[in-house]
Image 1 (cartoon, rainbow, N blue to C red):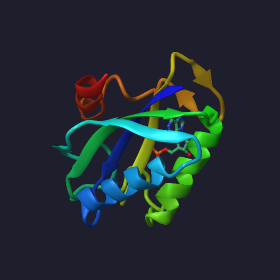
Image 2 (cartoon, helix red, strand yellow):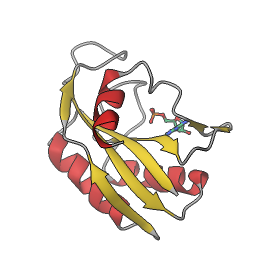
Image 3 (cartoon, rainbow, N blue to C red):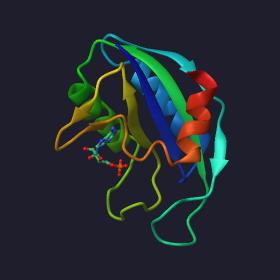
Length: 132
Ligand code: AMP
């Protein structure tokens, strides 16, 4: 399956966090990172004020993992990289979103694909448009 992911970071060494995330995604079973967009810097949307800016990128990957398994693996990577869930839309070392999973439409409790907020977010669409 060809899958597009959105990646963002606004805490610590943002570029390092994203690159480490990409390395971890590449190490998932039957999963390969095929393409990476350039990084763009964006203002945080929502959440508490005074947050640092985000660095965002999009990834094209191939995987044999189901969408739900992939989501679980991505959440584990977020945890490993030190993301805490304390504040909604608050600062995070890494945020990993499934934007597109092949041409599937998924609507479950844990997962909505295509990602519901991707179309009105420049920081998602711009890097995605670069590689899709
Ligand atoms: P966020 O704070 O943006 O990382 O949102 C995290 C929650 O959104 C996760 O616990 C997921 O279960 C849920 N979610 C729903 N759809 C998606 C998606 N397409 N990609 C990633 N997380 C999703």
